[in-house]
Each structure stands twice: as C-alpha cells, then as structure tokens.
Image 1 (cartoon, each protein chain N blue to C red):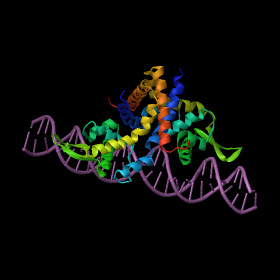
Image 2 (cartoon, rainbow over the protein chains, first blue to last red; image 1 turned 120 degrees about the vertical axis):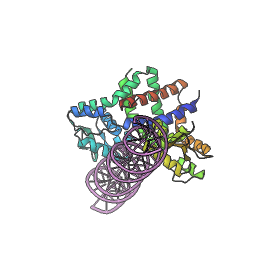
Image 3 (spheres, each protein chain N blue to C red; image 1 turned 135 degrees about the vertical axis):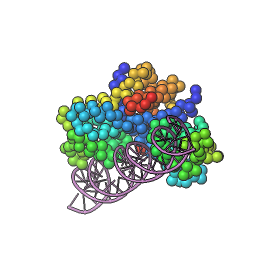
Image 4 (cartoon, rainbow over the protein chains, first blue to last red; image 1 turned 180 degrees about the vertical axis):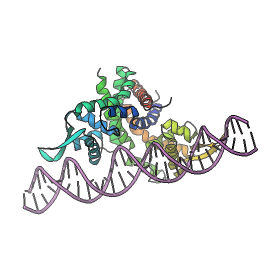
Length: 157
Length: 157
DNA sequence: GCGACTTATATAACTTGCTTAAATGCTATC
DNA sequence: GATAGCATTTAAGCAAGTTATATAAGTCGC
C-alpha cells in the first residue's frame, strides 16, 4: 500500500480539520444562549477538554495542564475563563495548600454535559458513518500520532 | 460498542495533537539550517500544506485558500512567508491577469520535498505501527471528520 | 468602447490561544 | 527557622488566524 500518499493526505487534512474545529459554530452559540448563559461565551477546544477532564473528577491546574498538553499558565487561563462564566470553581487542596483544585460549580455538571454534547454532534455524525472496527482504528491512530509527535517534540516520558 | 467514549477521547486527543503538531521541533530547524536556509525559518502546518499542494502543480492564491480551508488573506500571508524565503514564486496567469499563480522557485521542489519529509517523519513512525486496514480507516476517519465539521460550520458545498 | 458591477489578491488592524520569564505563596529539609 | 523547591499566577509577547477595506483586473449592458 502507498503509505506516503496517506501520510501526505494526513498532513493536508489535520490542520484543515483543526481550523474547522476551532471555528465556533453559530448554532452552538444559540443553544448556549437559550440555556441562559451569556451569548458571547466562546468555548474553545481547550475549554471543552477541561470540561471533559472534569467529568472524571476534580483536577489540579497542573494535572489539567499535563492532560491537555498545555503549559501551567495556559491551564490557568482556561480555568479563568470557565470560572468567569460560573462553570467551574477553585478551592485549595486541604492536603497541600499550594495546589488549586478545579471542579464544576454545583449544578453545572449537567450544563457542561450539554455544552460538550454540542461539540460532540458533528463528531458523532462522522463516526456514525464508520464501522466499529474503523472507529476503533481511527481513535487508535489519533493516540499513536499524539504519542509520536509528543516524542518528536521532546516530551519527557 | 461505546461510541460516546470514543467521541470523548477524540475530543480530548485532537486539540492536544494539534498543539504538538504546531510546536516546531528544534531538530527540524537544525536540518533546515544545515541545508543552507535561514535558521529562523518557521514552517507552520499551513506552510507544509502549501508545499504539499504545490507538488500537484501551480496553484492560484484562491485555490490554495480553498484547499487549506483558510481565507484568501490567510493564503496570501502563507505565500508571502514562503516567497520571502525564496521557496515559491508568484507570476500572473496570462489567461486571467487578476489571478496570481504560485509555484516553486526553480530548483526548490527538491528542497520542499525534504522539508515536508521532516514533518512526515513522526507521522510515518505512528503509521508504521498500524496495519494497512487501520491506516486506511484512520485517514478515512479524518476525511469524514473534516467533511462533518465543514458542514457544521456552514460551509457552502 | 464607456461606466457600473464583480472577482482575485493584498494590506491593516484586531483577536485568540498559546508561550516563556518573573513573582507569589506554600512545603519540606537540613 | 533559613533555604531550596514546587504549584500557581501575573505579565508580556508572539504566531496564526480573522474581518474590513483597498486596489487592480476582468465582464457586461448599453
């Protein structure tokens, strides 16, 4: 098989895809507005990542930075914005008061779920056109790429 | 199968992957320097996309914008930078003098090939760990996603 | 052919999502 | 209890986009 062709096509597709993912769809904005949040909320992919990460329990800023592959100040900024809109809350870890634990504001878990749902929709559509085997291979491919590019960028372990 | 899990994992992986892809690896910079180009060349994913697109022949700025999913001014800027470094050249289309055709500078096709090769390496590594079926499914998945997000962003046909 | 339009590209000003470097506040070790 | 070190934040800056606007070339009605 011609791997080179596939590699080139991936190099063409990945940046284009991310430009599309980053472009906030007006529909989504509407839906958020209908739920009573400010209309000008800009949910970037990074914010979505934070919201998904928090479904698995509270996280420190440092943990979020690592999970997202972002610098600690970057994580701080993402949390800032979400906190500004009342989605998440910070409180000090009683065990180590340097650590700031981030978690959903009470009752916002459900709102977060619906915001993520909006993002999930086009992805869900695309995946519904794949067989189970293809969907698994696709995600496996993403994992491999993330690992490989991480190693190339000199990521420590 | 639990598609929701796969969708969430994709939403977590994609932005992280793109942050890694966008981060220029110092190794690559070295290699470009060794080839006699300025050391401060910043090859972004967009520039790589242009170089790959040009392997299939000269392109107008508008065509590049469309292929990359970027606005015309965005494409102009990408071409600017590549022209600055002597990689590509502009000349008017004799058939329609509004059109600016972009092509490799004579002899730069080979240099471009090697620059793209650097980008290709981690991707190639990752893909070498997939079976043929998986690699095809992976690229098919990327195509589906690009299409689906494109539609969601209200792309006109 | 002349003027009103449309189209292709370019320029300018701004936005956003990150980055690194320095500052702050807490922990731990000696 | 000084000093080294870690988690987070603040500050400043950069790169890759965007929109709005300008310029220059082609098209069409008359």
